[in-house]
Amino acid sequence: MRVEVQAVAPAEVEAGVVAVLLTAGGLTETGRTLDSTLDGLLSRIAQDGEARSDLGRARLVHAGDRRVVLAGVGETSLVDADALRTTAAAVVGEAGEFVDSIAWPIDDALPLSGEEQAGALVEGTILGAYDPARWKQNGRHTKLEKLILCGDFGLADAAERAARISGWVNRARDLVNSPPNEMSPEQLAARAAEIASELENVESQALGPKEIQKQGMGALAAVAQGSDVEPRLIVLRYEPPEPAHADLVLGLVGKAITFDTGGISLKPSLKMEDMKGDMAGGAAVIEATGAIADLGLPVRVLSVVASCENMPGGHAYRPGDILTAANGKTIEITNTDAEGRLVLADALWYAREHGATHVLDLATLTGAMELALGDLYAGVFGRDDDWREQVIAAGEASGDHAWAFPLHPRYRRYVDSAFADIKNSSDLRQGSPALAAEFLQEFAGEGPWAHADIAGPAFFERSRGDYLHQRGGTGYGVRLIVELASRLSS
Ligand code: BES
Ligand code: MN
Ligand code: ZN
Image 1: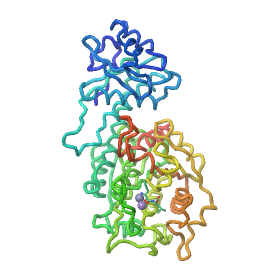
Image 2: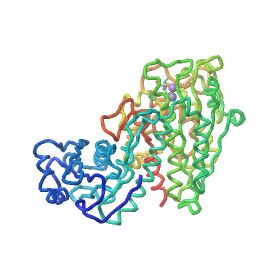
Image 3: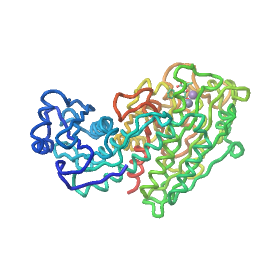
Image 4: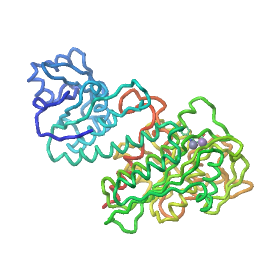
């Protein structure tokens, strides 16, 4: 999608459709100015209730020889970036099948700066134009090619930046939505290699089964052994020529189980198809690394993604097995469905071993996290309060919502094993997100580390009812990581 900023009035812009905000209080000044050139048609439609001002409602109308979408945005004083993204996506949903370009005025009536508006409108449009039904042969396909922002030329940078980041978010969604028979660990590694070949200062590497064994990564190897599909430990390195902090290496660690059946501790079959989304953490890490390099942010990055399939079968690891992770700790398996923390254990170790100073892992780790927070927020754990708060603040600023959860040494007893250094799950049906975090902490090495359990917001079981939030992968984490990296760039 092309994005342009034009210093032109909405009444004059050349576009397939012009979007006009409809607030709870009616048209804004910008809308009224356009309306006066259309003999008051828009306000009559609004007054008659043919178009509604509720957030996310959009109505296409013909006005003379042009098309207008009245875009509901609710109460003006409550409009934030989230709301504007939702509105922009709703306009794509209403008009994207008919028009190849949408014009959006930047509106002084909103309690958001021009830059914030530009960013949110671009993101909402590009994310809203995403089609998860790539495998449908007669699907709804958007014709949209261009977004025009009517506003100050000075907004071009903000618009361009948002457009690029949104592209990376959508590519993460593609990885997550791809079916597990197509998106194998090998394919995911190929995507990382493609990013490295396209962008400067990025290198990729992928360890296969033999190298994983050789590195002593007994936890990742054990999860992988039940599947005929080979595992990969995918590594991306971004080394900008002039980092803002030469001694800081952002370590991004991702869980990428390309399909999680639960293994011998088999999951129920209902909704198991959604477990193709169990690689969302890894997908976000890979695409966010690409985004950081694409934007040329001056921060060193080491990304490590542990990828394999969790399958039952004659070669599968079992409850009762005792494994040795790369850091030398022994793990008793009590549930083969708690596989994420195992593959992360070895990936965290690898990231530290290769110089990561500030580590953030992203993982669809526990169903209970989704039960607790729904699909809006990720839960973030961290032993370093300051680092955890930086992660959360970056998430909130970027639109990837995040909320703090506790780590506490008293949780450790629930993963104490009678036979090994630690066990991978507790038989208590309590606090499983916190116990998973407690487990990970044993492998996180020295230095700031935070863990984002993204089980809820990474993959939608169903659409939230608007075009911004469609079924399937959301690309959660890409925007958070890019914002975090931006904040580490000065
Ligand atoms: N991938 C799942 C977690 C998950 C469930 C993510 C639903 C998204 C939606 C993870 O591997 C898992 O199975 N976790 C178990 C852990 C338990 C066995 C301690 C869970 O949450 O039930
Ligand atoms: Mn599992
Ligand atoms: Zn899993």
